[in-house]
Length: 151
Length: 116
Length: 264
Image 1: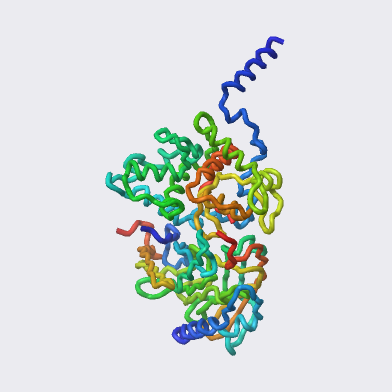
Image 2: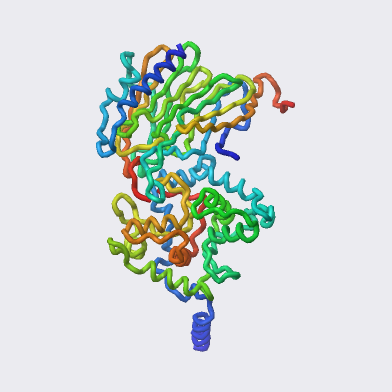
């Protein structure tokens, strides 16, 4: 089960590379469907059971703290196998993939992301039974990352 | 030379679900910024970072340009037994970074006497 | 009446013989001085103040400590060989640079002083300005002055540099025809594009600048300011940058050194 889960991750990465926006001038906002479909494909997807926290207003998009936690007993019977952090506007949609297992005891992660402008961030959790849960948050970004401001 | 910082709780008892904090030194060059002379800095980010404990992978992150420079990863582990934590990361240029740490887990039924 | 006369005489005396620093009037008086941190977002403040472990400057801090003890050059010495523990021997150093180098009579900023030592005392291959190594070691030296108030000398040989720096600060330049004082004395707290203008103090350098995802020296930051008003950017190591640095330090006297500082 874990192996196929990993394959799903790799396939999805290849797919989202195709979604990469060429030319930052576009910075079109992706639809929710575009953001999650490569990973979820046809599996059940439900909102909730995931807490996602970023600052509502990020002055500087280069370093934005992100905290996420997925409700799960993290036992062999039921655990979070993958977490995808997906961006609505960044040049590269998938910000990070995390691979977890029952050994983690807790599906909770803290990291720092880059946000290229005001957008919605999606935290997508895949469970050991193949189902998905997600949460979203809008972040207003005053100064976008990935945009060159000079030397 | 230290290229990463690791922080764990000072005392870990068997059964604890404890937090690990890893801060890796890496510019995570997105490929979109220019340097002091105006030259575009080529993309070079950590593509994969793994943590193994006694040779079993217990955490994996596959970042892209969307993770900030000098990436911070905080995650949790259930304490089972002592062993070697081994962190390994690889970037776009195939540079490898590593860090090892001896994880000490105090058995649940023991007294608090330090292990020899 | 006698006391008043005495008071006046003393005042006159202080004016003549007191430190030159106090004879000049600053645009922003001491009680209104504010660090750039006060103009930063809560996230930036959090990054600087909340958590030492995950400071964006963490690697610079670790590297600086390591370089301090690293033996280098023909003389086979490390900084520690002569200076021992930096947290003791370097106390106050960052508060008083730029300063006149007695041997050459030149105005050295802190980076110049470190490079000079490396070349003269260690006879080692020097670290270029803005190199990772120089930034890290400057951070290490600056750390010893954490919390100490800035206090530079603008007397003697430093006086002409101070005056040159002051002139640069007050003079309009570039296609945008702006002077430093217009933004940083007259309009601090107001927004320029997305940025809240600070008072432009140098008390946190070398900073971790989020926009650059890197540690940065004051010189780099000043060059960027020049570029921002579309003025000719001085070459690295330019005298103007050191003169301006001295003026800025004088202007910031009393502000405590912040390290490791984070700015946007």
